[in-house]
Length: 206
Ligand code: SF4
Image (cartoon, rainbow, N blue to C red; front, side):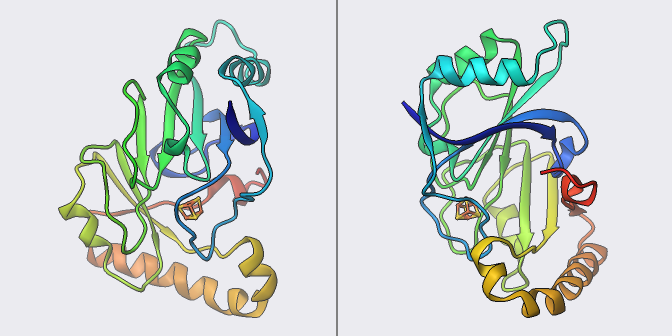
């Protein structure tokens, strides 16, 4: 059984696949605790691989579509995702992406790996498709270029959400434009990176 927080159909709003429709499977639980994390780690439904694939297919019900995307996210999906689930999603015709913090090895067969490394952690991966870093301003994201190989390097301004936001609304209101400005300024002086914003939130999707 996998612990599944939610499954939903929307537009991918971040990274190189921004704007592409995808079913998101959000797994519960993570080995890290980032202060801005918006995942509810306590709520989950135990599901088999068959149940997950059935729900994913029902949400993205276009049998002849050749590039149906399914994004495995969390929490930290690598703590649960395994080969049987990957095979079952491939058999159902899905292109499989994963969004991982990179601290845990991945099973074979995933089509697209997004690593979103967190400050001070040790990365277990070497080659990924894209690196997406939340720009906190507390350290230089260039450190990840020494540890990872990737085709796309994305910096995302910090958005405080969840419990932290509820307790610190004023700080968030005051900080957020500064953080966006800082992120843009950093990219202008480190053009290897590219700006990633949460497109889905701007257009009012989840
Ligand atoms: S790695 Fe991701 S899921 Fe885990 S605590 Fe940090 S933001 Fe949340």
